[in-house]
Amino acid sequence: MDLPAVLFPPWLLIVTMVLSGLLLGFAASRVAWRTLNAATCNAWMGACVLLLGLWLLKGGLRPGLSFHMLGATILTLLMGPWLAMLAMAVVLLALVAGGHGDLLSVGLNWLCGAALPVALSAGLLQLARRRLPTQLFVYVFINAFIAGGLSLFLSGAAGMLALGMNAAYGWDYLLDEALPFYFLLSWSEAFTSGLTIAILVVYRPQWVSTFDDQAYLGSGPRF
Image 1 (cartoon, rainbow, N blue to C red):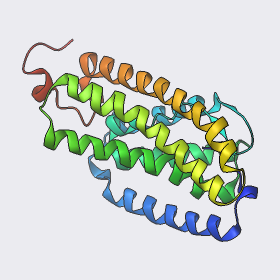
Image 2 (image 1 turned 135 degrees about the horizontal axis):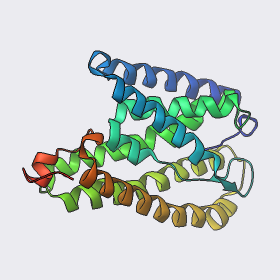
Image 3 (image 1 turned 180 degrees about the vertical axis):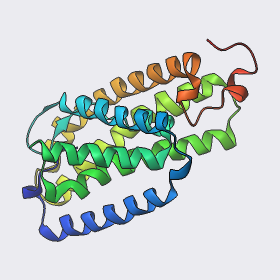
């Protein structure tokens, strides 16, 4: 998300900033910091750097309507929702520090581009665990492929809703010009998320914190 502050009223920017701060504080409180080892911390920082590069590869139509891969589902499956939310907040602040965003709209961008897609990915993961069989296909297809595509589309739809409700652009323009781009990009997000997680759970299952290789792959030999 790259929603500029100039398109939104100050009260909305303040409310979203406060709400984002509260949610990030809650996320930080849910992380078992004492159990994190050096390898986990290095992986978290490496994921932040990779995500930063991914977000810099973007295109757009107008201010507030930028298109780039999200990576929220991959982060959620790799490190859990709480660390994923914190990682995406760090990436947003890094973009602002580099002149690629507005500080005043960080809260709004984080809610639309991080909190919502991560929550969706985590919710689908819990739903699949409770309602669907413990199979590798289910994990990759539902929790990575489907969740990846839906998370990006939800993020784009949330940004469009914010722009439309604040009369930044007309609804006809948003639905006719921007929505098709988010729909098409969601397929790229789905394939990228599914392929990445499929490779990792087969060759490096220990890197995916939400994946139980004993439950999904059995006790056979690891690669």
